[in-house]
Length: 255
Image (tube, rainbow, N blue to C red):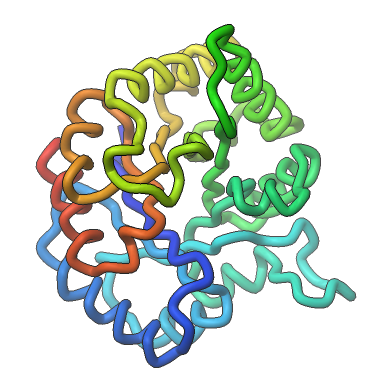
């Protein structure tokens, strides 16, 4: 099984390139001693080229926050997988709940995912419900997102995909609002079961499943230990170098 992974999604932060450099330098210092875990950051696309150019180390990988499904053309404002790859990006978030909230549907998510994979980048497919119901309809919702997101992905390529489960109702809140570790463990088993049924056990066991939703240094260790997730997609806590490094250290200690 691949190493556990922590991805810091900076979203539309910080406000300036100077601040982005400072944050990156702080993160770099804090995670230098982390072992047995992969660390990646996803800064705004505007800052990616500058940060990758000035960083020559191997501790931190870079991740795109989104990508368009075409490689070039008359698509004002879009960023292509080819452009991301050209500046040293390795991972790319696809179908984040905030993109879906702006109207991005499963068909678009699937096109983006396949386009990212065609350029050799590793997609992080985000899935998750906006609310939970007592009848378990949210499970069917997550199942449909995974099924539609992976349409026409060759069997041999599925193992290279990362799935990030992010319950929308827990995003951007305090650690107390995160999913209980036992609930996340059940969701991981459910996603794993879906993958086994569709692609077989040998493929399913190679797909890393991350948790995203109010992960902080104070709850990361418990979530990892009790839920057996393969890492985290971290939002607001990734804007603090110390908090992000604390989560990374928690991952490292669970190997």
